[in-house]
Image (cartoon, rainbow, N blue to C red; front, side, top):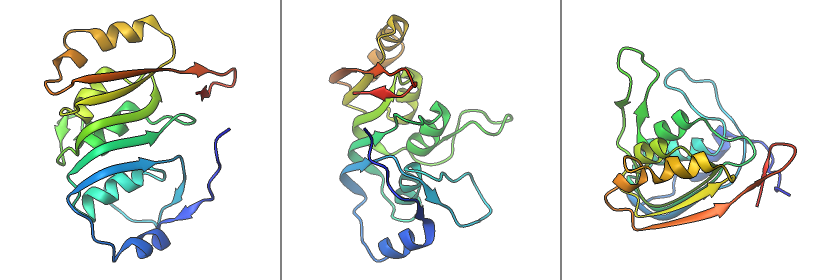
Length: 177
């Protein structure tokens, strides 16, 4: 069973961390499932969940590299485009400029995005320099074919190790590990 965290509010979170100094490289970032009540602000899309912290690390703290990134994204998985935007800096929201890289990608070396059957194109766009990858597989053979296609994971130049975790999807639709 997943631990349920209380709803956090953006302003107290920002105030708590405002004086913390961060290196541009973080050894590891682990983000559990949580919700954040955002303060109303105009501007680009902001995420009311664990992706908020990735945006904040890049924009407010200047983080550019994460050695190991683990994100629990099992209960209400994010869209592939959201992962590409927050981790890889991609933005497909403008139909006139699809696939625009709007921000520098986090340079992620080890990626453990705990979402069943994560799209290989999303992995390539979000973490092009990944060297170790944890894949969470629902048992679908088509997903294995996608991951093993020569133009997908095999084309990642630094990828050296892949861990495949078998995920059983429960009758409620939530993965159980």
